[in-house]
Image (cartoon, rainbow, N blue to C red; front, side, top):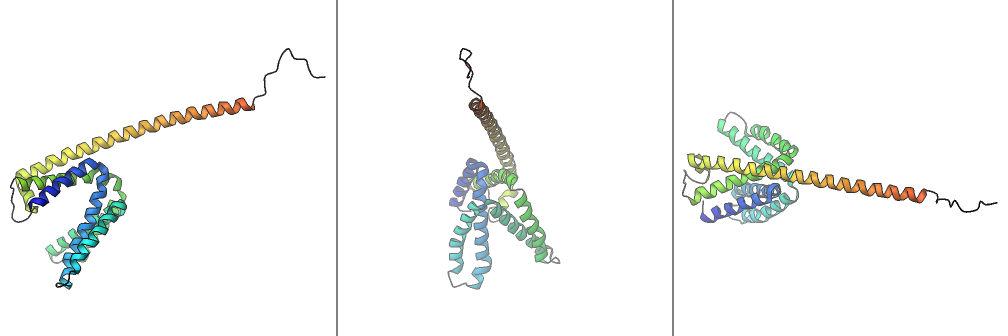
Length: 226
């Protein structure tokens, strides 16, 4: 992992922690952009090795996918989860050999899509802190010189890196859940205060309406009409 990638992961981790549940927009956009890049590198580049089609698709398609992911968070999260699940299922099926990769992709991708779509509210609270923990752990592992057998992935197999990932995930999840509960209490208190004000306003309006409808008080000293 190059040094600029480690710094980018540090910035991403801080951004996800600051945004809280709104960091799911960033994750959705990044998920779709990564899928576009992987699709371009895996399928488009071999078809046109001498043309810049794959590079253009990575840049333009990745930017469009990121924008769509930030605008339509629910569908983007479900699509990214389903596609990543399909990739994992297809890879697992290919590893076993006798299972068709399409069956593995279907068994993991379709449930992942619908589960993410149904549980988007919960995922918006849980996924950003977990992703922030992964990003921060990978960045620290690179900066502290943890080297695995190749890229960043095997670094997590080191005991101290895995322990750091577990601690950061637990810490960030606790902070996210506590912040969400605090926001819910504030929203409930604000809603209760608004309800009290609305009730007082309605009582005042009803009182004014009754006063307008009531007959004027009679003067006891006035002479009766003939």
